[in-house]
Image (cartoon, rainbow over all chains, first blue to last red; front, side, top):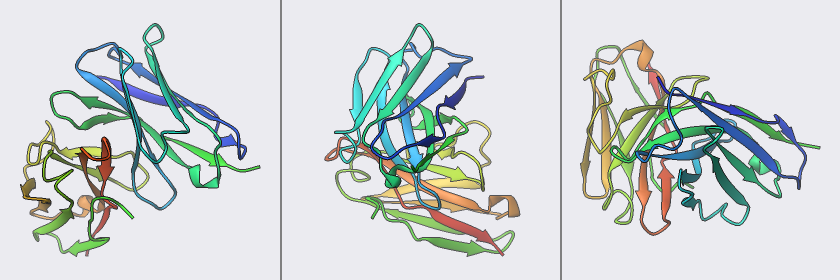
Length: 120
Length: 110
C-alpha cells in the first residue's frame, strides 16, 4: 500500500523560503504511471493546487504561484519536494502531497498533510 | 474566488438523497473529466469519484457522479451520518494549464 508522508518546518518567517519534502513508501516515485503533486489548504478554506512533477522532471505550476514555486524529485531517495519563496501570512496552510494517476487523472492517494505557519 | 463553483452548504436527513453541483466552463469541465473528493473533519481529502462517474475501489455505490456540458454533480443516496464532510470537485483547466478546485460544499446530516 503506497503511503505519502510530508515533512518540514512547521513555522517559517515572512519573506523566507518554505521547504517541504514528501517521502514515498510502498511504491516508487520513478513509476511512469504517475505524477506527484502538492496541494494546500489555508485554515477554514478550500483546496488549492500548487504544482505537479513527473519523475523525469516535467513540472506544472499554478499560474498564481509559478514565480515563487519549485518542485523537484529525488528518485534516489524516493521523494519529491516543494520550495515556496518569499512567503507571507497568506501562505499559511496545511500542505498536502498527493499522487496523480495517469490512468484516472485524479489525485488518488494523499499524505496526511502538514501545517505550515508563516509568522515572525 | 474559485474557478469551479459549488454551493457552500448542503444538508439532508438520514436515508435521503442529496446532490451537490459544480459549475465550470469550457476550458475545464467542458473539456476534461471531473473528480470529486471527500474531506472528513480533520483529515486529508479522499478521492470519491474520478473521470466524471467512476468510483475507486472501496467507495460505496451510494455515491455517484454525473456531468453535462460545463456542470457536474455528485449525488449521495441513502444519506448516513458518516457522510457529513466537505466535498470538493476538481478538473484540469486547459486555459490555466493546471488543476482547479471548487470552493467546497459542507454537507450536514440533520
